Figure (cartoon, rainbow, N blue to C red):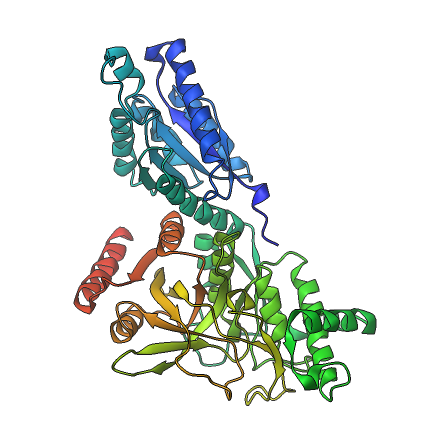
Length: 499
């Protein structure tokens, strides 16, 4: 349910009319060749469309208006091939509502030292033109990503691709709805927030529904559809004996399948993410476990206990990670292994961890849940694949949103946990657990987060920059004293900008 085919990036080249038609034709041809090469890169998930060369303020404003009104356009890549006087760009940049990336490159990688003359210099002066453009963008306080290097370099395509994924996620959020079944877990603070301001900043429309709406949808599905989905479970997972055909808990598996059918049907009516809470399960026989896990694996966002901000974050991370290896899931920092020789965090939840991060085939099991007061829920149990990962959470600070991102290394669990029937991910935070935990708590990060092996910090930096959201990064270089200063100055800068 994530389709990048409906979105595209526009490649817009800046120049001026002083060079004549011959040079402008050369500029246009160079732009077409660069776009053709970038479109072959496996790192860039969206198709790039080359647009005419901009040589006047009117043409720039016109292309901006066109981009703003075209839902297919997720963002613009801007490049000044020659010298493009930046006053031409003022009105366009002021009116641009789509994100943009400033690509600082030049067509030829190497200078023709033996033949270079002033005509060549005039026609290939991105070093000049991009600085002029950069000045006006900085003067206008324009948010953008800058990527410097030759367009043929894989690293350039990787960085453009990271931004393209963030732009795609922002475009996805701009017309997206999140369904909340029930309210937030009672008395919890961090899962609350201003839905109106969240929609203004992030784009997501958060809508509440009663559990009766969902249970009515569940009741629409009959035995044949339920049994067919149970067979799908049998084929896809290592199903516990008691849940297999003829097993004494097979009916519980059927109840779980009915919940998945109804929940999926509801969400496919125009939602990209959802929340539920164990405190409000009226009409459901069990808390959605395998249903939430499998639906999340198909690209939907999820937040437990009514945590709609994390549901949105998981969806955004799913969109950014589309087509990449590694998987993305809802996650919670649950408990610690405080061995002084190697402290670890155990991330898990009661049920709802996405199997896209599983190491091997998940096991389909049923166990009691000592919370919620419903039947034992069916869930998928597994360990996460090892590798570098990121955790990301959004908090409402009252006057703004803050995104906190932590770099972690998922490791194999140091020992088996046969009595812990949940999906889990064990990680070593950077720079170490103590400093990472102190930093996360200082930043006010939620106990819920999006957890991804597919994404890097750069993807989330680009996403936060496009939205204008404060970003706090926790990585190998984090020092608590410096972070305290960063948070203080961030707060002071925000208050100053609001005056």
